[in-house]
Amino acid sequence: MAVLRRDLTLAWRQRGDMVLPVLYALIVTSLFPFALGPEDALLRRIAGGVVLVTMLLAMLLALDAMFRSDIEDGSLEQLMLAPQPLALMLGMKILAHWLATAVPLIVIAPLLAGMLHLPSPVIPVLLLALLLATPLLSLVGGVLVALTAGTRRSGMLLALMLLPLCVPVVIFAAGALAAAQEGLPWIAPIAWLGAALVMAVVLAPLACAAALRIALDS
Amino acid sequence: MANWIPLWLHKLSSPPVFYGFAGKLRPWAIALALILGVAALYGGLVLAPPDYQQGDDYRIIFIHVPCAWMSLFIYGVMGIAAFIALVWRIKLAEVVAMASAPIGASFTFITLVTGSLWGERMWGTWWTWDARLTSELVLLFLYLGVIGLYHSFEDRRQGARTAAFLALIGIVNVPIVHFSVNWWNTLHQGSTIRLLGPSSIAPSMIWPLLTMMAATKCYYVASLFGRTRTDLLALESGKDWVRHIAENEVAR
Image (cartoon, each protein chain N blue to C red):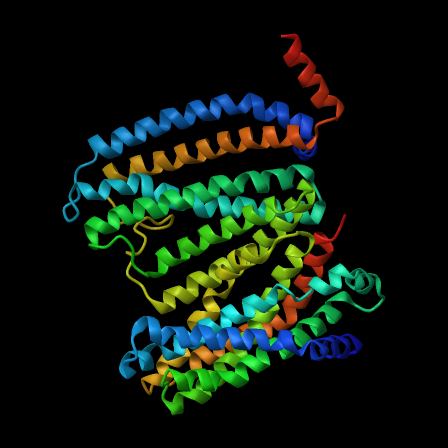
């Protein structure tokens, strides 16, 4: 819990960094109408997918920084030596990271969806899908960030590694949105996302701890 | 009793022993791969009759299908080696896992290229977002991720262990991706060859296919041993047995 509070405090002191992913998502989303033309029907059809992918990219942008400052000032090594289970503390760190980056993105998601004329009945489904998909990405991303912890340049590598892992997440989230947009039942893909999230909550912190021990073991 | 097998396996995991063993086996594997490959190509391209629906275009499967099998098989080998490397910390397993990655990536790439050549004739398009194609592409990205992660570390062993962990994550991921994209979109034909029960393919077509599969396996063994040998030399440089080899090379 102390780790969670410390990380949240740090994030709050650096509010500027929290705004950046949100700005990024805003800019990317507003570029789509320029590129594809401002027709309502087209935008309405692609809105769900665009918002989803934009969120994913914005999170990827922020992911890189998850453990960086802690590695630089050595506090991550202190955590590894601490008597408390490392997985639990890393789980708290991932939670703090999710609260600091994904929650602002989710808050702004209805605005982005509105900019692209996503029908308003679909917006709750979008929020639900994001609420399940973003922690999943944070958890999986946390494991990958831990793997690259020992390297110097990791930005592009992280994208390459995350892409295969986020394919199922995107498919299920987009599937739910598409179903909701056509008025079909959308609960099944959402349930899959939820199941994956439950599994990731249990397994990802353990994998993250194992990965960190390997990557920083020297 | 028969405990010489585990004993021999234990011995084999020591780099100098494996170096000699791989050096002895490698020429045989290359020769076998060449012979089987030529035989399979002759059988597939000349002897096998044209397909009643696809004409001569189907012949690309004699390359495509064995490569697709190999792309998955090598990932399996890499995953097992990665698991052994992480659990028992055997140096040889790390080297084998990392040497497998580029070979597997090339087989995956060949599968994608031949598949899209075939798709151009049969489906009228080079690429389609079909389930199997997409999973193969994701597999290629997994391979590239493993290779990239391995090379981004300065310390080779640490890089190998980290990349091995990524390979293990990928093993969990592959079935999930396969299932989810299947649910998403499917166009690729189902498999026609089954281990159990009758296969829905003519015998004159199946034997070149199986021979080619054996040839790719032999090629993999040869290539893997070659890579492993050089990697072992680089990793163990400065050790006594490497110095002996180097001195003998100079003396000859």
